[in-house]
Length: 316
Image 1 (tube, helix red, strand yellow):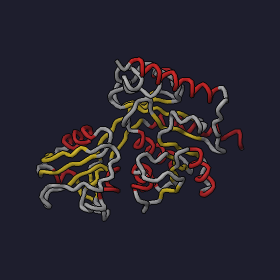
Image 2: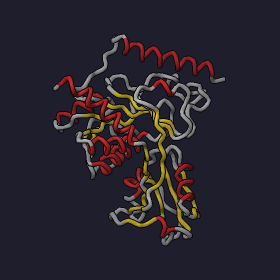
Image 3: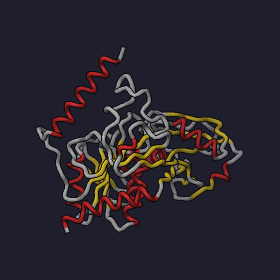
């Protein structure tokens, strides 16, 4: 029954992309290379952890990256810099996580190009921009497209709302990172196809910065909470670490936790995702945030670096 709506959605999406390709609508190009980390499937695919991994790898190779994002779920709609002490409700939880975990400049705006301009003006040493999400945001010209897939791949292969796809697949992207089986058409990516493995760190951290080994929580009833796209995956990883979940609370993605309280005994450990911690710590500073670790083959980062070096060469 949703197939006609899905076909209409696909036609409108294809028309919009064609307008940018024919330059009827203009994409704004930045003076530095732009890497977009996105997906073609609605919902959580793990773009932000990949963005963090890309930023860390670029810094290790001598680059000075900055990150731009829409700041999905925030209460504001302006262009602003996200600082380590920013309010997650005003900056967005994912941009705040990125700036705290990487220390690089991060700007948010409804139009990524506006965020990119503001970032480069404020931080002129920035020599590469990483866009967290935005594969379908054609107004920002990009030099490298990275497409991330979770374990579900392309689902039933239908476009929204009959399926999970934001646009038709396969489509050209520079590299594909997949947690499950490689999607059909992945071999077309010129920079390659790479498996990624997501796991939890061996420790958790509270609002004061104190770390707690996860091994110390084994055999102890805990309360786990997650406001992410796929909370069941987080709960499953906690169980894989040997934790006994007495209670598991799944909230809507990007929930602000303003009216949420843990209805559990005060001595029961409260465990959350790293993304949720910035919001949850305001009312539950004792909550233990478990970082997510992304493992990608070093060859991917080497190819990305080589591609960016080639892009930078003509300007020299």
